[in-house]
Image: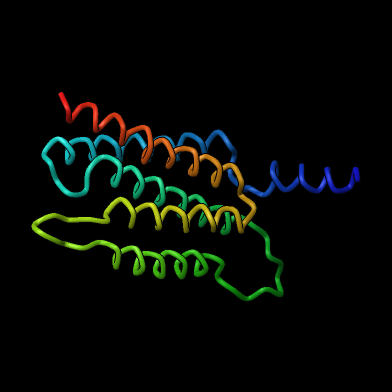
Length: 160
C-alpha cells in the first residue's frame, strides 16, 4: 500500500521540467494580459469578450508550457520523435472541432466561449496525459472562475 501512495505522490508532484513558480507566473500572466484585451472587447460589445479571450489565452499558455516541458524531457537516444507534434495534433484537431461550434445566427455570434473552452479542455487533457498536474489543475480552476464567476459578474454589471 505504501508503494501505491508513493507512486501517486510522485505522479502529482513530479514530471515538470519547468520550475513551478515559473509555471504559475506564466499562466497567470497570460490570463491577466488576455483579460485586459478581453475586457476592452467586452466593453465595446464584441462577440469575443472577456471570458473568450481569457480561455484562449489560458489554453495557449498551457500548450506552450506543455511544449517546453516536453522539449526538456530526456526520451533517450533511441527515440526518434518530435514530442511537440503531439501537441500540434491535439491543438489542430480540437481547434477545428471548436470552430464548428461557432455559428452566426439572427445577427449574433454564438458558441465562442464554448469553442474556447473546448480548446482549453484539450490543453488540460494533454497536461493530465503528460502528468503535468499543476498546469492541468490550475487551468481547470481558472476556467471555472472564468466561465462561472465572471459570467455572474457580467450579468450583474449588465443589469445596472
